[in-house]
Image (cartoon, rainbow over all chains, first blue to last red; front, top):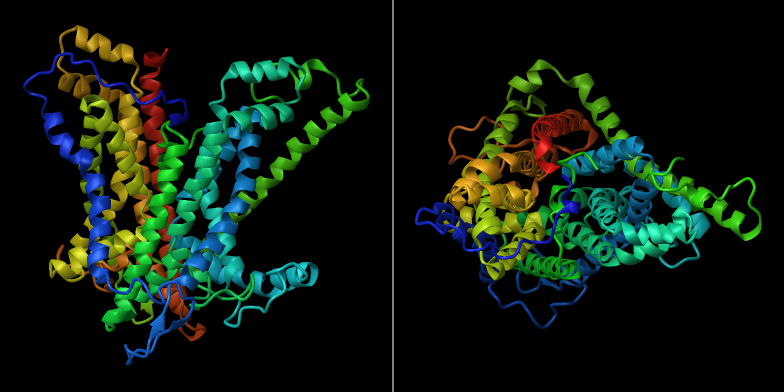
Length: 331
Length: 304
């Protein structure tokens, strides 16, 4: 869907023919406000379920010490989980930003229309693959390669860099780096589609002016398109971050699921979304653990909403393409 | 490589072969970076094809007719209950999210006063930004615990419906907003009411885009285990009523993927579930492509 070419939101419709029988307005107004209500309800339900009493004290601690039979002796803080989320989503975002910029400039500036169409369809196809499938592919196919080839190699070559030298994951080949890679390819279709639309919506006058002054295609892409579209690109980056932060299943399958701060890029760790995903069934029996999970969920919700609002603030234009990537297929 | 747009050639006819010095360096850099950027496609295309290859390679040798028609028994059997469950969940979710999303889109694009439309759009995007697992927790507390239903297909369907709604809402809103204004002016000038304009003029024009949104939301919903694991639960027998727990393909992969190799047949089941989900998503993708192409061709004249 060519939503990138969408005109700005329409002004209020002129009061033409406001008839008695506008049942769509009657039914539609509560439904249109339903998303707002739902977001608020989600927050309230989680607040109530958390019991509102664990905030404070060791809340931000990075220790996690869960003793199933002993609520009083158990102690934990949310620090390790927030850190795991920030590290995996942050690194994935750095990679995805660089790659998506390359892909979108390629598609918009360099490639002829047929290859550009085909590559767009293939990128969108990637968006349609279920996240559990990413997870099982990472778990079965990618993990041995990462654990036994890529990571030892990285340690030999880049071991002197912070993070690259630390210990390997102690539970098989699962850890941070694998999760970062999976997240990167999961968010690339989204960020690429958004950046593509942003680069494409740069006014033709500016581009023609650049070319007329003798700039090469790359110079125009770099100094005219990217500069003019910087808000759209920033918004794409933030929305990609939001997607990466919220991903639970695929990360849970490959990150190693050890609730602690990561010791290195290769070490097993955890993230907020993945932890609350795989821990809920053990929490059925331990109400005090359940409350902690809900607190993690609340912080996750807060992060996601703030990132999303910031992205929307950057571009007042429609960000609907974010929601339709993968469906349309065409550029 | 040719230019994507039909404007001038690289640097406006400046020739790579005859130019010298700084200009030549810039032209060469332009070419080199054009090819270098293509390398990024490897990073995207390799995972895509590797994933399709491995999932097929691991699933197809053990895929039989029984996989589609039998219940899961122990570590073997088939995925019949999960296939049925997936369609039931997606069915409920699509019905709910389409009803809400399309009607809300009608209202936002045509009737809502500007400030209301603004808030509604921001809220819609916000809902799309809520992580799926957080919606899963919401469904668990509200529809499983608070209502006392326990794990039910209905709770799973509703939660999945909430997850899918913002996508359908957005596409409907954008599709209707993008209908050429001349259509609206003509319809209103002929004396039609706004409701009539929406249903008889704008909606038929917007249908391909709306369908794209619905199919895309379905594909997203199919692949998400997070909203349904703790609402629909899991079951290895076919669903008996909407108020019973049900398995689904996405959750099946999660349930079966992590067992020691002595239970290898579990992993085979997980890969078969992954294969079936991919097939369903690809079919949805192709269907939406064909449908929207057909409508687009029929409506081509409108946009000129």
